[in-house]
Length: 135
Image (tube, rainbow, N blue to C red; front, side, top):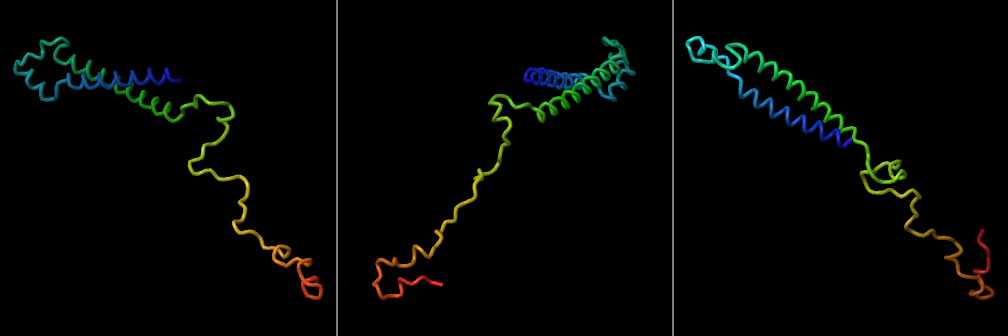
């Protein structure tokens, strides 16, 4: 997949540079008026109107190539397969935030039970109320 990305990128850059060259090579609409008065463009390589047709068709076809390579690069950028790693790592979803523990949190304050707060019966005098079981 990486080879196709490089090939499409090279074709894309070459098409862009060629479009720039072809647009700069074309003459504007005002240049046709100069040919009528003997400017010399009628003696060019493609003739008086041949260059306009050839260059405009080449520019249009390269614009189509540029458009298609742009779509191809956008598709490859959004559908890039994951490379490297193990099979187990590819199945786990990536989290953007901090890790959340899977077990419930333990309360920060210890639970107060009657057994820890009440005085022991062995420590109390024999006739005191500490030996009685609360109801």
